[in-house]
Amino acid sequence: MIEVKHIYKGFDGTNVLEDINTTFEQGKTNLIIGQSGSGKTVLMKCCIGLYEVDKGNIMFNDREFSYLAEKKRQEIRQEMGVLFQGGALFDSFSVEENIMFPLNMFTNMSPKEKKERVNFVLEHVDLAGTNKKFPSELSGGMLKRVAIARAISLIPKYLFADEPNSGLDPKTAERIDVLLSELTKKFNMTTVINTHDMNSVLEIGEKISFINKGKLWWEGNNKDVLKTDNEELNEFIFATALTRRIKE
Amino acid sequence: MNFYNFAFYKGDWKRVHFFFFQGTALKIFHMKLLQEVGEYLYIMLQAFKRPDKGFVFRRQLLLDFKRIGADSIGIVAIVSLFLGAIIAIQMAYNIDSPFIPNTIIGFSTRQMMVLEISPTFISMILAGKVGSRIASEIGTMRITEQIDALRVMGVNPANYLILPKITAAVIYFPVLIIFSIFLGVLGGWLSSIITGIVPSAEYINGIRAWYDPFTISYAMIKTVVFAFIITSVSAYKGYTVKGGSVEVGQASTDAVVQSSILIILFDLVLTQLLLT
Image (cartoon, rainbow over all chains, first blue to last red):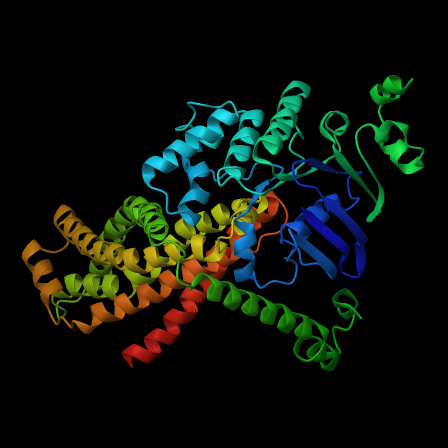
């Protein structure tokens, strides 16, 4: 479980996050939703330690993270898997080398064990046999799945995904959602997904946190979200013609 | 008052002097310079830490030997061969006196290649080739979140990305410069025998005359310093990129320009220190 306790974050005197107080539960897909510029990426980057919080705490299973020195953070970071928006795969490495990278850095596995782990995670993301391909040879959806495979290669306790289905066609986007949801259940991870994709919200949103203007506006799940009378959330959810038609 | 308003005070030299040497512009320049130097030193301190995994460092080092060193052999060979040839022909053209022996052509070609052309000129070419490559490679990694990915995986990105590049350059550049000196002298000899400006035996006598081994040490010291400048400045420029492809391009240009300026500056300082 990840606890976010009253965190504040600003840039150049402007508050981007104000008093965010929430928990991300273990074994569930926790979604952070909100419009572009609402502060959801900043919240995620605070959680993974890429931004320092101005005030407040972030706790990983009751372990303080936000004010730890960089070296001491490594212990918790080795339990994290992060899927960046563009995948952030290393261009000069093959698929296998990309997935093997965290294993090389943090484990003393034998080459055979590493290879087995690579094949194991590639099978989970339905990309068995692509070991020798390079990122430039993969499609957008495949890139995201390799990035997921790399993120789960250490079987992390916490999985963060920043807009995992942005730029993908609806079918591939749904496939990524289902994959993340299944992996969360299988490995009992605390998964935090940053998204503004309404399909993800309705399909896999077991816990949803709506961020608006840097504040936590609403919390609930994918069943509550359609019934809420929160004006800003309704505006966000039913912003497209398709979702308005579904509502009708 | 800003710079453009000052343009109207063409005759008021006191104001212009104040603006440039005591006023806002100087303060901004100093602040920016201090900030850049501080950032550069901080990143270098991060880079020069013990690598987390020795075999990962060794693998990166081998890759960088190829990318930074071996891939530069072609351009170093072509430029050195032709520069040696040009120097020999120009020497022969300028020294048109019966009182000066022909051996001076071989001697001058060797001395110019050893003292200046190979360590400095070739280093500036390497600043263009290797420096722009390093800045754009690391810059692209920055804007595509690959450096963030390394950080959240608990890896020290500066150490992982920069240290192998600096090590590879500091080890490999002296090899390239020795190669360049050899090819430059060879180029001079080839041009001499092809054009007939000086007999082969006299050219060879010239390159063997008045040899001082310290000149090679001087060239190697300069090369190592320049290798460090090229790789560290370019890596710093790439590492601190913010924005998109335009900024990566800008960082790449800045890396080449600033490395070249620093090479010339340090060339002067080292020459003064080592040869006088």
